[in-house]
Length: 42
Length: 447
Image (cartoon, rainbow over all chains, first blue to last red; front, side, top):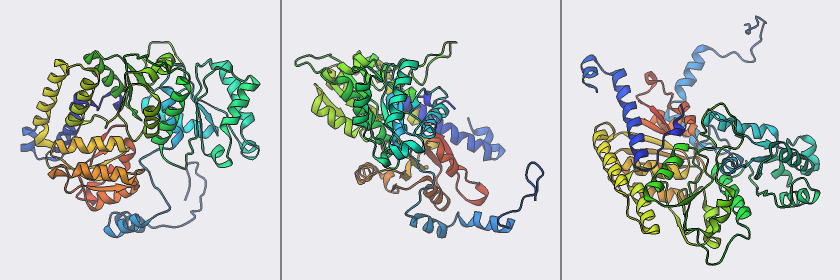
């Protein structure tokens, strides 16, 4: 929600996009991995 | 069988649970994908909106501007509600509510009455007029209608009424944005060019960009550089105004005087070449100073190009603060590499955004795998292909021009990706039950 307030352009926008994408992948890994890997994810 | 009220309902057809399950599984197959890609006369969930919606966004970007829809009330509600839902802000606009009689006799009377009412009630400084399908199909003559309106005294003679023909059945929101912005600039700058005068300012045009954060970011970058500017069609305050207990019908927007004087600018830079093609062509012929059209600055390479161009145009070095920011972005790219490298992405959306997404993903060593634009051209296809050819990670990328999000769903089900990047309508394609497919699809929305 309210993603239109988060810039995507410029260096700051690049950082915002990367954080969002990586956090999504990390969340999916957390949801689907076994206990050993769950503990390893930071 | 009964409905919610307990009344008996006779089903039109009887479909068994097994049949529903069979079809649900079948639409995920290669066989269905082939049939899906063979369709020619039907669009399902396109990744674009109609021209007037884009026109309304451009109209909202100016001070005291009241967008005026010459067409039906339902169309006007669609554009407004789309913006309400996206920005979660009011989108004040009016319509002359054409109905059946307007369709038969033409919409001049509706237009005149609505102009008179809207001018008296809402006291705007400008009313950009654009059309929906109905007046375009019957061939309403906006030029004559508006001239007659001023002669009748519906609005004062010097009141700005830019207008654009924006048939919904042709083009997309970016074309409507382009036509409306062009008309607004033509209207406001008429007779304002002064030989030898230079405002010393940069005219910046973002193109169709519904991210208010981007507008603020452009302004921050220009402030860091110390470059004076006029942001043409600035929606950052219009659609991101503070909640302080006071309703403002026209918050923000580019000052009309600044827009009028933009014709005497030092340089004009558009960062949405596909969304401002006509406007930029006209600017090149009519605006003073230098004219530059370049890609939306997504990712490091395109941002580098943008900053270097600003530096070149205004003879100022790139500020140390932005150099440090670049370093932080590169640091984050290195940190993020392990999560993104080699991952396959599906990307979809407007041409200007797509070029940015693909460039950004290639920088990260990710694979832009399915690249889909539901309203594109051969020029876009060539430009995307050229971009893919610059990197080994672009080898697997496939471009789909004039395909919709139902096509994308077929692609994802038969040839999975790790993530999708695009606006929120893609969520229907991203809602891929993992039990039915090996696809692991997540959604990163820019909408």
